[in-house]
Length: 148
Image (cartoon, rainbow, N blue to C red):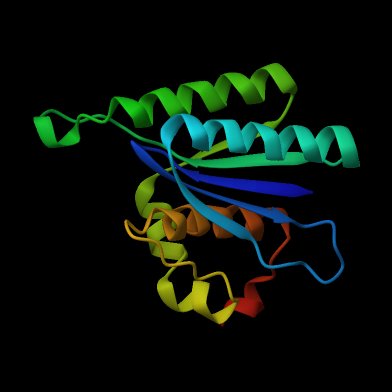
């Protein structure tokens, strides 16, 4: 199983882990502008499916627009829609998580403990890692006792 995490927005955090390896490598985490992030996610997914024949899952923060100018993030909405369509069209598992779900479970302590801490200027790479961690525990790529 290959798992991809996304914190969508004008500047997006994305992360990828190859869970098929016995020694489970450290995930890749990047912070990229919206369209570059979507392009990289589709590359990771297509590469895993076409070259390795692997099952792929994408875990994405669910953006909900609220009233007020500070909440208006069309890039986040567009990213979620583009990824949702890509997953539907390619028969890829797509999971939306609320922002608080990733932050509550994927604490800084846990990310550091398992070597998944990737600081970036805006912190979006770590936010994608938080969602990736929730997905990794749900799919069994990471065992809960590793986080204690």
